[in-house]
Image (cartoon, rainbow, N blue to C red):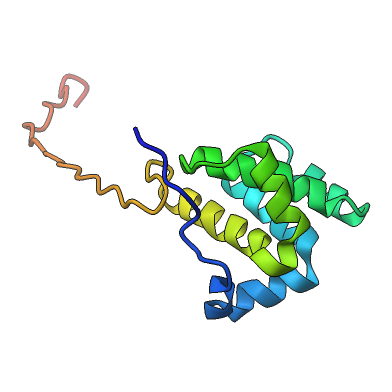
Length: 136
């Protein structure tokens, strides 16, 4: 499986979703917790607490790498930390949350590729069971 070069949302792409942009600017602790929850992290509250303690940059660096790994996007810790340090210029937190939402919607899709699953359901009808009429 080949890795995708970057997140689906481009830098500045969060302006297309002003709700996400405002939510992330006003409540970064909750957006980090949402992203961690979306990818099934064991302790999403830790990201919220880290942001509340002034460690949002570090938490975003770790979480961004984890989200990228789940979506099979090329991202190492150095690049993730760089993007999180310049979050206001790279819109990195919005991009991480967006990518985590895509993962939650379809965990089998990778890096913006849609995976379509087809399910065929068959039904069989069986004759009803005979009831024991001995007690009547």
